[in-house]
Figure 1 (cartoon, rainbow, N blue to C red):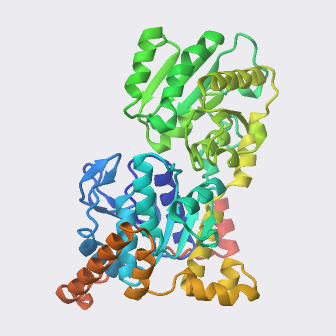
Figure 2: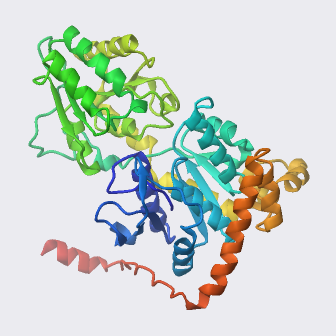
Figure 3: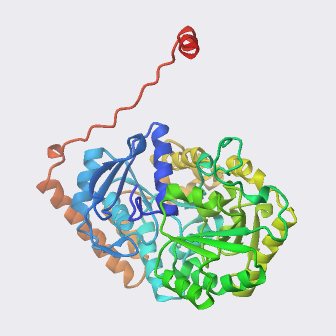
Length: 481
């Protein structure tokens, strides 16, 4: 797994990589993660379940993304891949420089590659145009692509000019046991106050609205700044809890000072992922004003904690939760205020059974299922599954499919075949991409001569626990003792 975004930074991509990796390890695979250094967290770290993380010391440019160098990452990446005997490189996130560089180098080394897209991008602004061109370069020579929602799949197929058969939809999930409501049977001795959504709320009972998000423009922080004063003015017995950090935090603080709302809005600042549940259970409603979202894992976490979700109807958000758990709003100030008001009214009239949300979410989302579906992608690109079985085409289409795509979705690792795919990425960009591929291949040959594979030590695998079943009499004696 390769991505710029990983723990200790909180976020959906970070959680996705960690949970998916641990579940793949449980299924018998060896998984390592490559990311950049975070503050003092450098070198090699071991996480739960023997998950090894390589924190490479690269310069961070913007929003935890490293400075793109294209080639300088190759020697270190090659050394790691050979040391760990890696067979598949799985990159995450369109804006991750390490991800794109790793996929390029992996294809040069003859490794299978997978890319997971977690975001939605437009087609008109300068940033999106550059990102889409880079994505087209990377995905023109990738084995398979995974998207976290059907909306995300449509967006990625259009941005990178992909065959839809080359893209699978595997959503995010949640560890439901870590996001249980206070009043859940598994918490019989909980000391905190129980949320009042489990009974009919009176007109003077306080309703708490929770917001946990990175405070950036695309997360709808400007909408939040405009909507909070109007929501609090219309509903005197409502309070807000806001957790998160970002450049828009100053706008929220200025809004609170202008409207003198410090006693009704608590700003917690950045919180760790393991603290999210403790913040969520203090509320009744979760407000998510995002302007663009491919999936929104935090919505699943909020519903699992027994919160009624108010969210904007953008991107892949409508696919995440069933209608009875959510109130949708347009990404506009007036509609967001109105939708929040409807949610408050429903809770006061006891029209929503939020106490049932946790068990329903637990049945809908599972990281074990996500890992099994991802494993099937690995089997498909590795040749364990036949093309017809993996891609789902009819026998009549086999000849045309093999002629255009070849085994496992790409033609071959041969440099000439890769150059043909890169050349079709644009009049000028195609030539530039071919030049990058040629330089990368020359660098690979030089590294093979300068640092031969047989001189690179192979890393020892993390020892697995072997749990032996105890005899029934021994178990009974220990229990009785």
